[in-house]
Picture 1 (cartoon, rainbow over the protein chains, first blue to last red):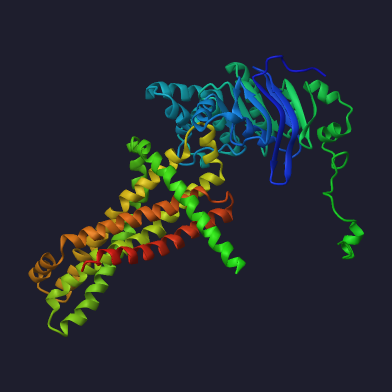
Picture 2 (tube, rainbow over the protein chains, first blue to last red; picture 1 turned 180 degrees about the vertical axis):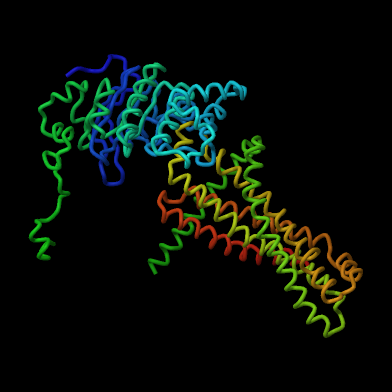
Amino acid sequence: MSTPSPEPLARIRGLHFRFGPRVIFDGADFDFARGKVTAVMGPSGIGKTTLLRIMGGQYKPDAGTVHVDGVDVPRLSRRELFEYRKRLALMFQNGALLTDLNVFDNVAFPLREHTNLPESMIADLVLMKLHAVGLRGARDLFPEECSGGMQRRIAFARAVALDPMLVMYDEPFTGQDPINLGVLARLVRKLNDALGTTSVIVSHDVAETLDISDYVYLISDGKVAAQGTPAEIRASGDGSIRQFLKGEADGPVPFHVKAPEYEADLMGEAA
Amino acid sequence: MNHLIDVVVAFLRGCGRATIFLGIVLAAVPAAMLRPRLLAQQVYSVGVLSMVIIVVSGSFVGMVLALQGYRTLVGFGAEESLGVLVALGVVRELGPVLTALLFAGRAGSALTAEIGLMRATDQISGMEMMAVDPVRRVVAPRFIAGFISMPLLAAIFSVMAIGVAGGHLIGVQLLGVDAGAYWSQIHAQVEFTDVWNGVVKSLVFGTAVSWIAVYQGYHALPTSSGVSDATKNTVVMSSLAILALDFVLTAFMFEGV
């Protein structure tokens, strides 16, 4: 299979991470190429969001290295971490918009917090970002007045307000209707290419994610189960990849959680 | 026995965590003071919006005190001392304590629920990821607003209870106590120390309620029941803290008397 470009923006090696007794990553390696859209896919609860939080410095790995643009993320002090985070954006699954601010102020939030730009310039920048996501006309609404799809687009606009080097999307397509889904997918691609940024998408929406990605990682059991271009992934003959891509209930990834024999359980004989 | 030890250890651990959190909040206070607009918004929502309940409660407490006090005093022909009875009761005790209890129920619970919901909806994590310190941006302004608002609300409570609706309306207008006697007795008997002690109490209560409210909200579990538990904890813990602190402060204040 092909490998990403030799100088990735983010490089993760030998990642180990556990929540209590539950092993999330057990020696996983990732490269996220500059200027590309890379997808990390896998079933729910496999640790995709955790990966983004590790890259954002919210969680520290138990072992392994995480380098983003040459920065050794787990070793940053709190002050250095905040400086580092100014250069990246994480779009949360639910948008995480500030509910006491309207759409305009939400997008202006990072600009007002981190720059000393005059208000007129902030207004121009905010309107440009809102225009890019098609919501210039919704600037005075509050988040609760917007649909789920609009909230994600507002979160897109806010995520790219400071022109970050890396944008990480956590399940950007979950729970969206087909129109919104297509709109959001095209936006991810468009924003990545227009801003020259690097994007990481964590998702289990197979078709849309493969359509807009340059490179794909499939994770399973704490490790990278497969990687390659979307075409290579689609052409793979591996059983667990086919099961995931086709959405089959049973296969190498079992439908049933490990349990005693069904009959013994019903008869009350299971210990 | 083991269970009791576990409970005590958990309580002490909670106190330790809350104290560390208070240190972090206090460290963020100077930066928050440089954002007057944010601060004004919080003083409005914590303080100004609590005024209705404080004004109404202050009035009724003053009215009840005046009715009860008059019945007792008139038996001794001492009804002209009604003003002193109402004023000392309100300034020393009822003003700060009742205001703090109402403040915990109205503003403290709202602070906890707001911060807890921000946690549950990833707004706090979102700020951290945008390199914005949520303690500085969210917690510190609310904490300062509580500290500033509490003594002012206690003052409004006392003015309503003694001067306006409460003592004066019932004592002077309804029961016929001489207005000159009512006010001159207050002037002669209520000392600056009484007022000052009331201010100190309300500052201490304001700090305690705000501290408990922001701590509970910031550390609420990010679920519906987590936020509900945190809100309940704020009201219960604040109320107990207010009554216990009131006893301790009163004991110290009257030590030399």
